Length: 348
Image (cartoon, rainbow, N blue to C red; front, side, top):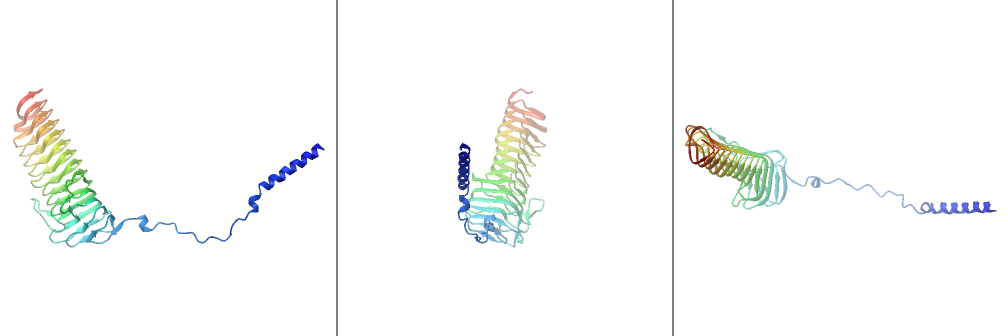
């Protein structure tokens, strides 16, 4: 009797368990009609490349945004690209902006007065101006590579741009505290090669005036074929400056830098020179109006190899002349030549 009752109880529980697991199969499953074709999911070209293409010149950028070249551009005169508004990024996209103007005129890229938040990158600006070998520049093409009018722009960065063959300046964006030029190359321009507040990793060669000028310079090389400076800076670190008849490198503070001049001072530091080398044919090799530490000054026929108010562990060289001239010298050595030192320590 008990066994039969148990069997009936098990059967009832099993039936109840089966019914509890089945309710979903008893409900409606919805329409079997397809909802329609799938909606497009691909992005538009504007979403993928939210920039404005430039395919011809002259071209004026009058709206903020990002712009890019789609091909090489050539103008027969005047300006190629004018930036007339704030907040512009211009990517040359590896292409070249050129001018065939018979007499050099106009600008490769012209920045209107007083603009801000400008970035220019990755390409080339090319004219046909050449140097006759005596520092006289002439020929076709642009007057300027990248330049501005009126008030200098603010918050400007130029990177990865090369400029060549301009009658006047190569890249000049002013000396304000927020202008930067980096990894750029300028060659054969009749005026200033590169001018900005911060200049890093740049080269400017065959310039009629100052090759590179700015506040903070590092890892850069400038060569002037005229009376301008090779490098002119407030601080110069790991730089090379060369001038035909001006100062090779001039800075308030120069560190691990080299300056050379044929007729002027090789390296001039109005404050401090540390680990620097200055050389001149007929001028002073290295001139530190303040302190020179671990420096080397060489002159072939100038007044002195090295001059410093305070020279520490420095070497001077001047065959048949004054090797070192200093108010105070400590641990210095005249490799060749004579000394004129007021107070001398730890040296013959």
